[in-house]
Image (cartoon, rainbow, N blue to C red; front, side, top):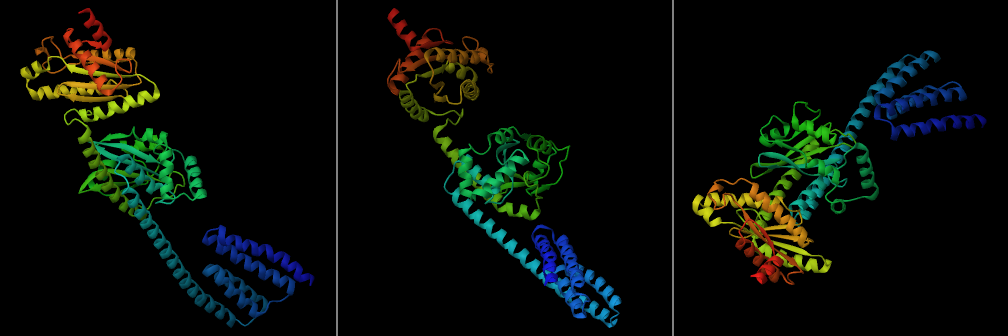
Length: 507
């Protein structure tokens, strides 16, 4: 009884090691550990119970093949031969041992191969089912919006989410005016950030729609990443991999960075990329951009099979982006001036009303600048309408570049422009208007020497809400009266509505 107790005391730890090897070691290490453990059990059995029977040795060989495969069978054969010589059994047993090894090993190999194939097929099928599910969900979510930024966000989220294709990071580039420009990225900047993100995704079981909502709250993913992504820009036609993908319309898998490729060098330097894949976005036989994916967190190798799974998303992305662009173009045509690209009078009227209501609620002032090009009819008559149009476009850019992002610059009609300046006092409006006037005066326009004052200049009138007017219509009228007062005062100057009233009283 005591012998049995000691036997169990030794065998149980060995069995624990066996189970550990099943789940924590790779296949070859696990087989080796199991074969050695069985041998130890056999030797322990011999030390406790004396001589081994031939039946025990046969059982040992069969079990070794079952748990250790062919390698386990070979180890058991060698030790079985040792026992044959030790106990001086009939040498015919050696033949039987070899036959058991060959037959058992062949059966084990066929069963193992079959299981591996079934597992691989099931994993492949599960992967395809997941990809189809994500593709379907992505398509359904995309149908709910035509806003370009939202479309880009949905596409990138579906590629990177733990619930999606599972790449650690994805970056979208679009072709624009002969350049490849970074538009949007989702993912970590460093490996450590990436591991934290994936742990969060796994712990909270975040799905695709949740991931998109989270990215919305984070202002289209990580701001630091997107600041860097938007800095990436490279000319098409240079000897770089991005141009190659766009021109050849096929994906590329980059395992090592080419130091002679400027695009690859930018990705490596700015985004810590060591290896990545590029997939083209193709619509109607034309490449409109590309998607870059990499696994910065788990360092998992990107295979061409994985790239193939990305292709349907790329095709869907290209079509969605094109539709969003067309929608935006239609919207712009409704609210923007075709020649200058500034907002048109229709949008101006809507915005002026909205900004006045906003100023009322915030109890903040608002300024309106009405601007007119001096002697523009003379310029057109002397130089022709094509050159006149060119000057309008140039002036529009000066106006747009001279104000804040929140300010609204519009082409009011002909050579007249308007700028809405929310939360701006009369003093500040005067400074802004003078700055714009000086920039126009100092800018060289073609054939401007034909103008009566020798250069292209502007006159500006300023109206302030609520100081000068209480409604949008009143504000437009007072700014317009100030503008005509500026023109009647010699042109190339700026006048406020107060100055107009003061001048009228003096007159």
